[in-house]
Length: 47
Image (cartoon, rainbow, N blue to C red):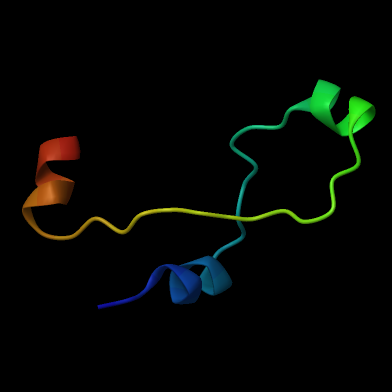
């Protein structure tokens, strides 16, 4: 099973959401990237 970090290193990630107003009004000190890994029946139910 591939974990999320291994998957992200194999393909280029795309930005899903970007809050431009927050970037302009606040100082962003750290950014975090989160995700989930679907496997087996979970993938079938999404399709």
